[in-house]
Image (cartoon, rainbow, N blue to C red):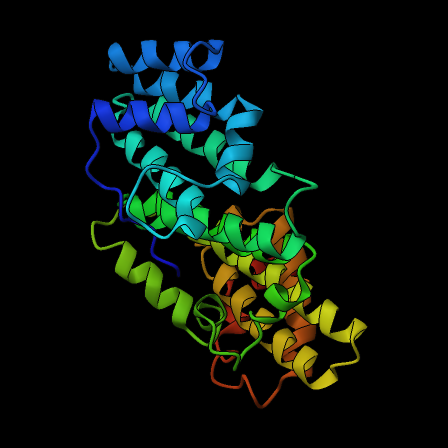
Length: 291
């Protein structure tokens, strides 16, 4: 994933420069005045909320330049966004932190603009969310953010970005969706044992849904071979998702639907996923289908 962690040491002076950048250098605007007050009071939560609720500030992040740094001006918005991500470390209350992270991600996902080409907008959103992913260290946060990155990749109407997730395209995100790579990443993230089965389940479910959209796009483009490869990747991700249900009692409607899909997939891929599907009859959601 793109690394956007160049701004990791912040100060009040740098925060004020960020505020004036986002406020179009209008020192008397209510937005800038409010943000300056939050900086003076060291109130990171209020500063972040004020910025994220101010559409012109988001416009600046997405398509303005001349942020006061020595970095490449084409990446100014990403650098400014990275500073916002660093400010998350100053939010002391855990529940408030999680809420603000969700607001931050939602603001990126929902952003629209007629001034930015769709392909450029999707790319910038990806870079911003990757910056957030790289700057966070808590396993559950990173697991959730990664799911949002996958979703943005296929939700912007950028066919090139969506097709980059195909097996064999050697993109960073696409490679994660191949074989057991996503499971390996989760093991690495979970060195402290923080991840819950529900976290892994949600990520596998998102990943399988995303790969399904890749397959659908391939079919619309009459790329049948690539569509089949995506279907196979989806089958494997669904198997991983179903494995997060420890008992039949844990099985819900989502698991039941996925188990039905996996049962059909087992017929479609009897040889290519032979080893991976050997355990299919022992999965709790599949066992629940027999009842």
